[in-house]
Length: 266
Image 1 (cartoon, rainbow, N blue to C red):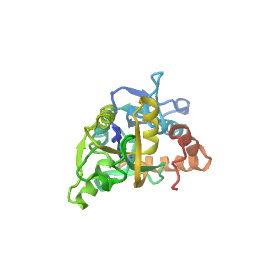
Image 2 (cartoon, rainbow, N blue to C red):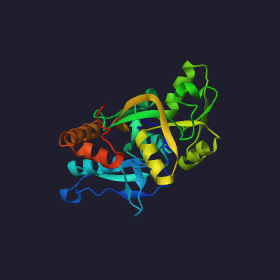
Image 3 (tube, rainbow, N blue to C red):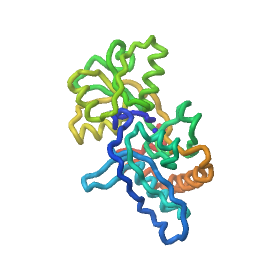
């Protein structure tokens, strides 16, 4: 989910790799448990990524680990893959749940099951080079190039805007986060759609030299996605999320990984 995009990170987040990692839940001593395969990525800064020690971590990953601790009847195991493969992997039941900042849209809702308890608010905004003084809102992108990740909610936002404005924006699709930054830096494209916390991270990590402009395009809630027949698992996850919210753990995780509490609407 929102995501939605993010320069692959930003543009919707393409993940790289395919290694599986077992979650570190404390379930092994509980007897027979049901294994749940969690699909996620590795290139979404501070959300699902590989740290300097080679560990899969981030907001979504650590939240799943917290849920794992609170549901001893399940054992959660991660399977990492490119963002574009997540929905297909869920549909073919290679994974049981997606944890990747996923927002609700009609196409996804028709095929899959979203849990009820949102765990993040995903503020999408137009992103441009720090040097760009011409683009101050999405209206200023008419006749310009906007790069977004294919299948991301950022792409959905851009396509919806275009449909209502005579296809005024030239939408470019990409799945490579670093390439997106380079294209904006060099002027090959003019903008992307992403979140403030992703841009802050990119500016610190790789000197992306980006900024957000204009009003928030969407302030969608983020959920986990499951297959339609996983009603019991959805219910258990919602129960765990409620307790994680109530005791302040969710707020702490958001502040730690995203730099602010994005679990409540402003």
